Amino acid sequence: MNILLNLIPVTFGGGLQVAANFIDTVIDHNGYGHNWWIMVAKGDELSNILRRRNYKNTIEVDNSPLKRMWFEKFKIGDIIRKNKIDIMYSYGPGIPQDTIPTVVRSAYSNLYYPEIDFWGNWPLKKRIIAKVKDRYRLATTLKADALIFENKGMRSRAIKNFGYNSNNTFFIKPSVSQFNSGEIDKKNIPEKFQGIPADNFNIVMLTAWHKNKNIDLVPYILKELKDEGVTDVNYLISVDADHPYSHTLMAKAREFGVETNIYLLGRVKVDEVKYLYAVSSASMLLSKLECFSSNIIEAWTYKKPLLLADEEWARSICEDAVIYVDRDDAQQIADKIRQLKTDKETYKTIVDNGLTQIKTYNTPEQKVIKQIKFLEFVYRNFARHGKKWYRDQSISNNLSDN
Image 1: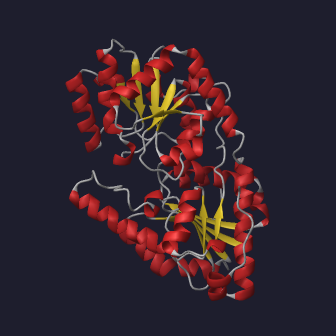
Image 2: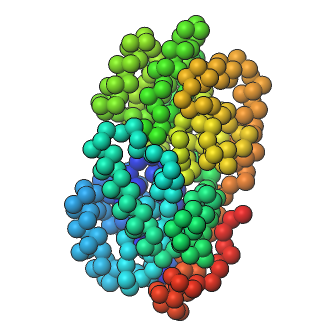
Image 3: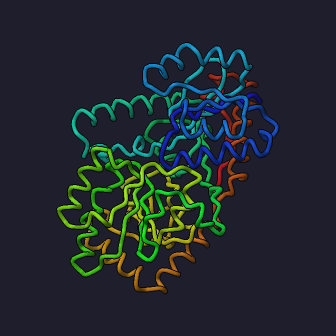
């Protein structure tokens, strides 16, 4: 097959690591017998990865909203015709096509949980814009000829709530990302990590600014710790210090006298992740809702306990391999941190449980192969019967993970 891989929407967050793994695995295995054209946002990290790999079938697209809309409306058809594309696979919102089948990896969890006010804490204008974007994302997702999920709850809701044909869906377990967890040469640690005190208890929050992540709670957690005489806990957060929300965060931290315990590192590149965890003691993720998170795999891989929001999505994924916390209770989280600092047995148990849990996941190679098999299944049925028959009556694929 000639496959058009659309990674234009993937520019930050955990999806960036997932997409980078996919690219590397496909290139390392010569496309698994298929030809791939890969579309990425111009000048972003995925484009840099493809340049380093000297990948010739790269299509860089200006990711500004108007130019991207123009590209999708007027240019992508030329790319499909010129390269005789057989199928398109998109990470994020799809780009519906009449002439070829389209498959979407659907990872926007909030689209399937409308009862959760995902944007409730945002200012009115931003909230309206976000909801408009969500309607667009949902519409283009449901127009896809097939959907790939890494979360069973989202898959079942797409079928039940939106009437999506279950035969055209595919569930695949996340993969253990290609993190290099071997020995770290301290000489190569990026400069922005070198000032972090290695003898302190450092907690990673590898995330972007989003109210769902509840980063705002960090100063309150540190204050609770400070009030108990614990001053050697630091938060290492991958957000830009110049972001308006960062200014608000640090103002609150200064009010509580804990500003020196927060390190705002800016965006952490894929190849810097191992160094960040090398100077860390634990990880924390307070999301109200996620499809999945690379933070989970990272913590397990690098043998760091993860403090995780006690939510339905989290327990369905992690079982006993994390420390569950009330995402809004700074006092409780501070207590759990003190426990991890002082109770070596609890620390070891969580790490060991994570190592056990990670063995049940796909390797990057297994995950890519399973996705390709599903793409092949879609293409065969589409080519044999046409789009309308495929959308309405396709046979069960029996390819999903358990």
